[in-house]
Length: 63
Image (spheres, rainbow, N blue to C red):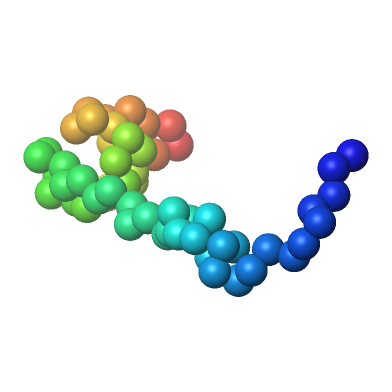
């Protein structure tokens, strides 16, 4: 197994890590409910589960 002959400098280490960044999540606003939610995710609004502007699940209907 290969071993480094010399220790890498802090500058060289930091240059490698420049692309490791926290990304801001993409927020979408529903045209039907006006609710802000994560992109490509289902979300609850007034006891109904919405996805792509359509009701997927209704809590009151299942109860």
